Image (cartoon, rainbow, N blue to C red; front, side):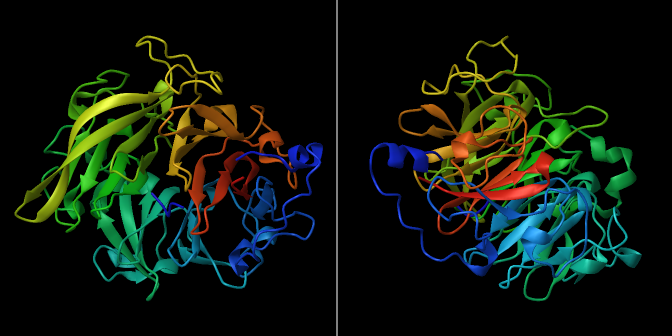
Length: 425
């Protein structure tokens, strides 16, 4: 769900008697580094946040700005970054001069919408007048607009970057306090209707496919849903609504997922498409990543994808082995042990990267060999390692990853209230 585009250490080059690589080209304004952190391949550097949880205003350099549990970020094709500052109930844009500006979320936070429901329909109202409650993900649409999963509002909101206006693009306005938000059974959840009539229960993650269809993790009801490219219909593509781990090698709509559906849930799930249209799902509390295959069909409204099969991609193969853990690097992804995987992103090197949140690491699976490796982190919670090899750094519950247009990996180091960057080796 994001622009597509970790870890030979500099130490290894020195040990082999080779000179270190010269620095990469000068980063964009939004990628500026402190002078002490070298902009070299395989080296992890701070990018945004001071490490202090809080909010100290906009128009400050991003490295001098406080964040609160940043959960994700996304880059446009022009390399403009939007940061999902979940704990501050804001979406923030990185300006060309390397400062933050809020584009969604008001001073009255958390909340749900603008005064007099003015954001209920397009074109909406200025984003800084729209209160939101724990945004968790964002995606850039083909027209350049930015869709945000407003998790505790049970809605999706859309930002027009040109006008700065925001409106509800999916989910009923009244849903935030209605028992209907927890409706699980199609069609009463809005399936087959327009996105504005949909009912969500903690929509957590988003991904866009090559046809312009938007996929959504409807977290507490254990479903993956799709809004068509014409923005006229929402349907369930995977998930039976039952909680658990079941259904591999069968029809996606009969599969069980286990996203956090507790009374006090944490954001759960993750989505990413590969270059041939397969969808990967972080089945967080099953501690697995699963793959959904599609066939392309043509109907009255044009081309669309139909989900045909779900399979295991990473994690334990045994049906009843649901224990989290940290095992398997260097071997097959099927058989490895994961701990609450969340966000996913396709890298520029034919690898699927994911935040192995409970293990405090970023791992990757090479699509052709199906081999898993850790690329950032050592498997212990902490906040260390800047200016060194990413493989030696410590993270704290990372929940989001993204690649910019140059193929640089960015990590929402959620528990450390920071965002860090690493050019791939």
